[in-house]
Length: 352
Image (cartoon, rainbow, N blue to C red; front, top):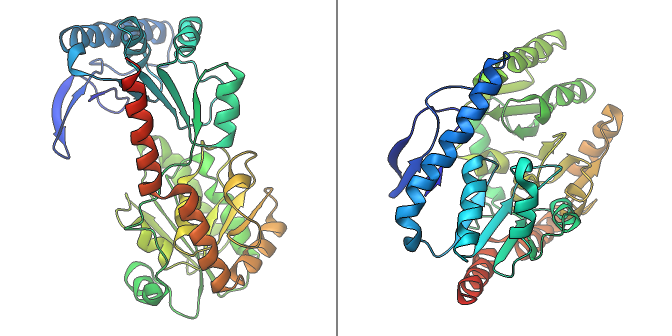
């Protein structure tokens, strides 16, 4: 497996989950100040292309196909190299974007590559599917991110036990949760405004990773909690949540106010746990995976409307939520999607 990195500098070979990873990353950060920024960017392009070429020219016969995520010059170069050797390519579109033919500086070459039969574009939302077809990418498969049935399932019996273990709230509280990176587009501060208009029994868990670029935003969240006098009603937790599913299962409503997403997998995961979602209306994304009144609600970013939607979501009957969880499994279970993925991969390889 070949990866790039923004957070780590320098090439390195290491192991992760028993797989060998080759990281291609220049030994310097990109500086924002001109003219160093442009010199750095050109050096980064050269570094990624050169070391990608040096790796693949010796190892091309070891690969049946190329499967890419993200946007880098390594991805661009390897896409060209695999196409040159007539090997299949899968490009997975996971983030909100305006152009799927990255790097956009060579989009004409990328477009020609994805006109070929032995390519597949995987779009994780209807919006990304529409985008891929707009750019004339030939074979597009729209499917949501797979949900792990072994973790995300209805388990109401453990709800209050988990709440006791994970939060400072109790059985009498109505617990709202938002589990996401502490970055501006996740829109936590909007939720604090909403909470301030809800009755005292409504409490909120805000939990997720905090990186350097999010520290100023995190301070704004802390200041907002103090300003609105919500210290006793907000449980603020920093760190990666290995037990993401348990935080969902101890909640009454999951909140998803994100301003931009490729899909928003937690919206599916929460519903799979029988926990209703109140979400920002992201066209061709959340409106395709939330059935209003059954799995929760999607709506525009208005505080008073969110207050009412949260109350309504909290009142959805359990039998409706359980039935909706079955529907979520039908469209996104990992066993279903993995099986279909395997068929498509085999079909691509057999084209050769």
